[in-house]
Image (cartoon, rainbow, N blue to C red; front, side, top):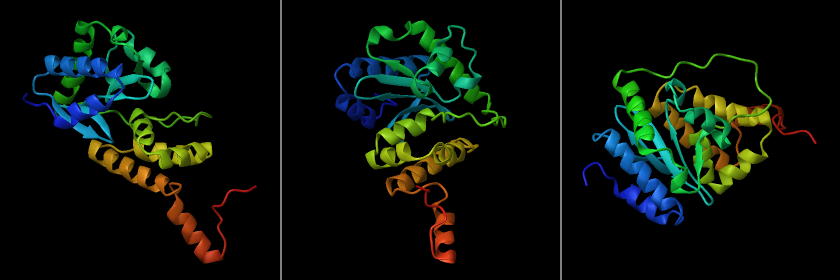
Length: 217
């Protein structure tokens, strides 16, 4: 069918049995809401695009998930996004197709997300606030880490400050293309066991003969 990606078909078929009907339903609703929607694989999981990223979905071992790129700008009359914000890493965790909201509601959210892109409305820059103790991992980084065990192990072993360096670098990107490049680079570096500032730390080591970036024991 038009605008249907074979990569999406393969992703869904490789997903756990419980997740397949969930992903198929979400996919169908995106096309119902916006017949011009395009399907693209980014960071290893399905994204829907129309004049920019609209949303995404993913399947994991014990749940499926979906989210919206500009969730912060949606009106959220049904409190879907508020509930998603409380969930793991800010996306909706679904274990059964019955847990999805009614079709008309999800279609309405998709239509609003599409309209934001049509109007050229961009995500506002995040205001500088006092750093929280807990590092909030964005959904795209979380999904990418789940696709790379070495990178995930490195990230989980990081101190909060090292985690925050990567998160802040990725989320500071103003364009989707920039964010995508930074995310890919971050996964590559972490798979090699490197922190975000590894190049600076390497320079310190070469200049002084020992690694100033090494953790204290």
